[in-house]
Length: 108
Length: 111
Image (cartoon, rainbow over all chains, first blue to last red; front, side, top):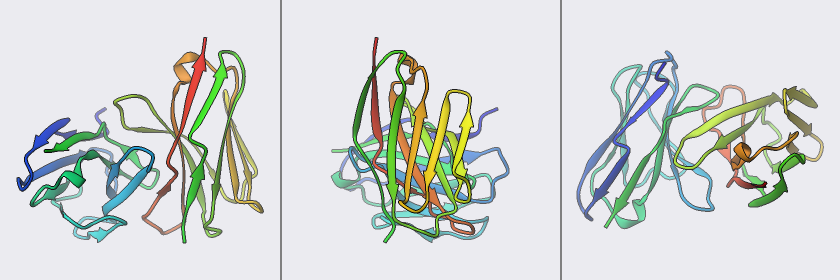
């Protein structure tokens, strides 16, 4: 009964490094999302995928890329990490947005 | 544009009722949600209401919607220390893929 699984849970990067955040869901949802959560700002949508094979920009897409590998998996890539990307990242799936546990990313 | 606003903090005594308020701007919103986030965890969907409803009750939770004023509230009856968390209000609309979240209300429950 996993729901939405994100990896890793924690990560520290140096400025300029790249990494990919992984997300998988086992609820057969068409839509998947990536959000970032910053103190006092709620959640902001980075990218979303309405269905397998499609991706669209959200509110704050700059500095990120995504891949909808298949119906289950939706990954978020930081090509050249910046300190402004220090945040907690959440993956979600489905219309009602079932959330993963989050990835706490620090860029130094 | 789309916006969801909430007060940032609420403090109540254990056993009292808590009322968390939210206002939204998108009149085309179809679904309005309440999520709960405990420390170190993701958001958990608590309840939701369709925009054609005025009220929804689910055990200790009561959601009230005033569509004219674009005001949504979440009432938690008999608040317990385990209810201490951040509560997010959110809106979305039919056919849309963007759920707009408020900044969250941090609920403190004093024993």
